[in-house]
Length: 162
Image (cartoon, rainbow, N blue to C red; front, side, top):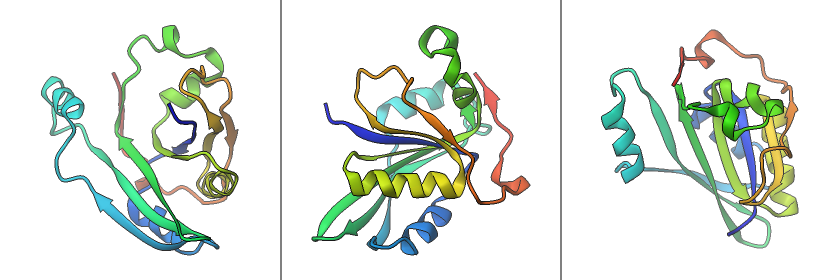
């Protein structure tokens, strides 16, 4: 499996906010959003389990270019319900706050320029980052960056911990 740079941003960071950030981030270019129209099978099964009138989820890809004509895709995922069943069993205590907070998850390939981009995103919005997350990592590599952007009340939707 591939190694990714993974981020959990504080609150609901919407696609327009991410697009604005990326369009103003040098040397990123040709930024556009690709929406998912059909829910993956796994998400559909969760929709059947929980009340879809209360559960809100937003996910997809933001595509962009970096120098030397390299195309990248940033995966994003937000849900107003934190699925923390038996969290203490799966996550070490030092990341408990991360998993119990309302967050927007981002994932991008792990190269030096992409790590710098993800650090820039986290430094702006605030959240946790793991610069080089292998699939067998146990979340101990995440660290918190407070962020520079002020959070408004509308940035935080009321969420439930399930």
